[in-house]
Length: 142
Image (cartoon, rainbow, N blue to C red; front, side):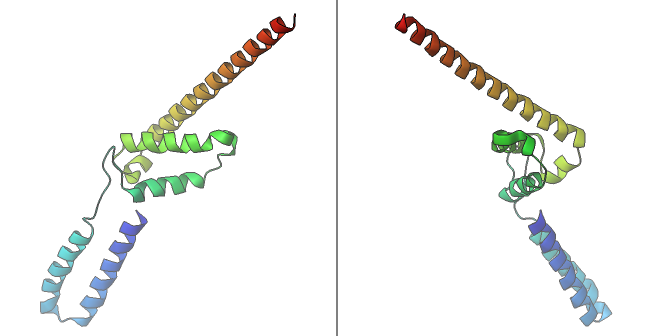
């Protein structure tokens, strides 16, 4: 996203500088040429639904790191992975996702629910194992 923006700004700067130096008859030809270069420069790899570019994934992760996720504790990394995966599957790019706040909020809630369910299941399994060991230890000492 940022890389794409910087490329476009540089092309526009080049266009302005070129136009300042040229006469009016050459300007039309130059505009056509620079427009073609601009189009080619902006046709780099782009994200598609289910297969984002690394730049879009990194941009989303960077935006997430700006948020206070301290309440997630140890589950923060799992949440980030889950969320990026769900957003990537649902939207064509980070730009498309950022325009659908209700949709991305729902995806965040889904990830929170999944992680909470996983945490509860792990806690129950751990408690069951500990209870079984304690019962076995009590029986063995009698």
